[in-house]
Length: 350
Image (cartoon, rainbow, N blue to C red; front, side, top):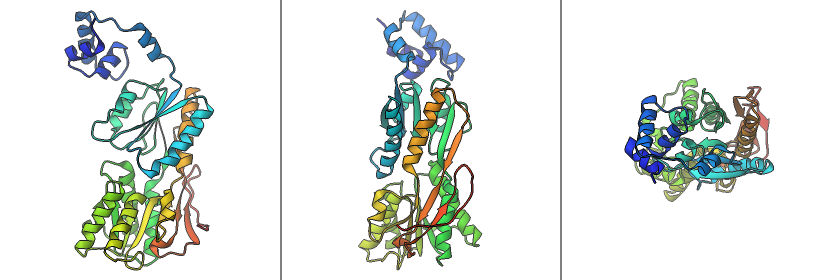
């Protein structure tokens, strides 16, 4: 008996594409659909009725795809999502999207869950746009998309980065480097623009020699700053696009006997738990990761009830001042970035 794998092979398409074509799903080119149907006819393919029925019914499962499940950044995000899904009687399936062609995309293409939350820069916008449909809404956390059945929850990364770098400039630092993540990450792109905007506002230019690539991982930050230090090219301060890279940078400086913040100031982004415990404690932009997760999950359940009144949500960030930039740890800059879109300054003990 022929299987869908045989149909896909004869038609020269992937199994997921064959499945979409056979189930008359959108986002399949008409030419491809005809090839698949002709292959199924030649092979006398008969779909498994039980499996098809199961496929079309609710799974009572929410999918979550992250760039990497190993990082400390995601723990609060996952907890926020899990608390909402559990309270609604749903399960959560968390998957990683490691590499150029992650297998987790099958969960998107084949609608293996009732809805999906995605925070993975290596899953393309086009793939997400093709997969989203009325019975399979998608929430993106690392980009903003204007497309049917796609919604977003996030923070204003550009504005938050501008706030952080502006603080360094106000403290008198002028030679400020940027330690960035992957070039195809929207978060990284927006944080770099905020860094550039802050320099430009003070009449300063971005220096390519101080723009480093750390891949959003601790080892990447360590290696990038170690290489820069070996060449005696260190700036006065470094704005890191996430905390993991910032902590790696601090380790590289410590190895060479370079003191933070006396010789090089460091500011990160995220406020992971480790940020307050490293020495010196890390100044960083705090993202509300638990709230981001719970908001994304809550929005999905609203969509399940056909409530499409909210397309995107922007949450607040806050600049947490600690010792790594030579600041007074009793003062922090708060950045209003929510529904009202206002700015604010606040006092906070950390």
